[in-house]
Length: 110
Image (cartoon, rainbow, N blue to C red; front, side, top):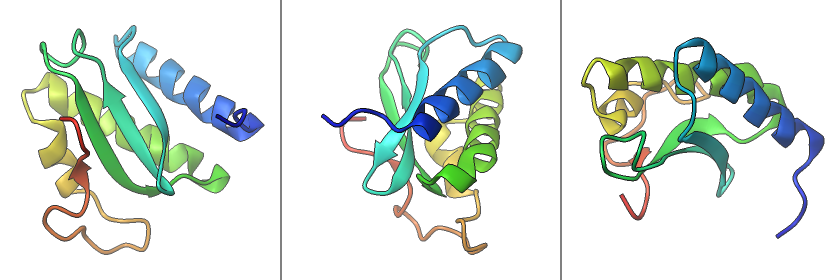
């Protein structure tokens, strides 16, 4: 596996800090998946079930704030009982359009 680029380390730190400000201490991580940001939620943080959610945001250095904001939105809505897939389905894509049903949200293994 290639080493993470500096901005990838930065995005992970930014997301982790933003989530910790909301009371989330662990179990939520972001990584690249086929050019988009993917949110992984560990079983301990995901109400006993591991979850992977593909965000409609490109995994690019100029998208750091957008990725952070999207992850925080998913976290806040998850705390209110809304499933991550449902939250992501309502998010606009990077080009401003909405995702087609099933296009973003659940990744494999959920």
